[in-house]
Length: 125
Image (tube, rainbow, N blue to C red; front, side, top):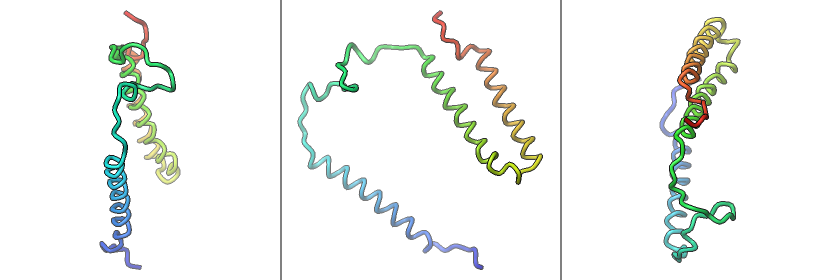
């Protein structure tokens, strides 16, 4: 069996990408041209689930919200890397197990570091 691939085998993928991109471009451009352009004060107001907006949305708030979100994403993405390891656990053997233990140790060190720095403390100083 010949395992070499030719560029003709990628033609359906290229056609699909071109058709999808063309459709998106055409609908966005068409809706911009054909859509109504009525701008008024009520239309430009922020709408949040039917609740009237109150005050200024540009008020500063604690950077701890951003820090908690970034730390969540960081550790969430790193945990995602464990899934392929768990799927192929038997094939990787003891070397794969040792590598995953070292990976988890680095994650644990990072978590202990952010706890020691007080990154997750919510008290207002």
